[in-house]
Image: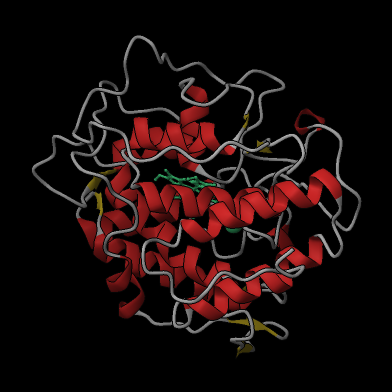
Length: 330
Ligand code: HEM
Ligand code: MG
């Protein structure tokens, strides 16, 4: 039975997390890494299993312990990912590609593709990864990282800050609109595409800083390229997640939608998004998850129900709408 998620830790201040118990080691041949620089770093320091396969509880504990990620944000992100990309039977998820290490798959159309799977959680216009349409959607893309640095120099004087986040976020959306005929930012992706631009401002910035939301480029390079803490890194001094995301969005608001051919972006709110979190949640359950699991039975159904409850509870003490039950309430 999938165990419940951990609550917030007792101590949530800054502390050294690049410590002797968590030495960095390069990924070995069969270790899995993927599109998330945060989870990649945690695996390379042993806060997550170094092979890149973990349970939701391990992920939540790791992001809280090593990054001081706020409890509700950690739970929401983890269960949303686990429900679409993880194995509900074995309670394991890959932080990258699909792998046999997550155990036998439930029947198709379930994918259990790991977090690199395109279109479930992973999506287009990532800052440092290419769109799936062009091939590799998970490795650090050198030209895109050069653009990350260029924007940080031009708009942030050598730091990745809120202004840089807003401008780079928009630049990547414009690039995808102009080049990717299948570009899509709908539903969950409309939310994560903006949140992920804000994460590094809060989570990758050393907790002892006197310049909040200013990430030195050298530190960004450690995380994004080497999947490594800056030497002697201290986690944030209070629980954090996507603080500042509103200003990233407001600088260049782009509605949920998709390309119908290049340079032809069509707003499409059928899966919800930033403007309508309840619609997003409802459609994520009734369209995305039910699409993968149209008629689950037995242990699969039981575990999906448990994870759906964990995801609903991650919406906080005042959820935007009542819990949705994709296959009925019992
Ligand atoms: C991207 C999952 C925590 C930072 C992603 C993506 C996934 C993911 C699936 C790919 C989305 C895409 O860009 O297409 C998760 C899960 C987490 C988690 C399940 C569990 C709590 C974190 C943490 C950080 C982080 C703690 C710390 C900063 C990022 C960033 C990106 C990203 C910056 C965007 C990379 C880019 O745009 O190039 N994450 N993540 N994530 N994640 Fe995470
Ligand atoms: Mg992506």
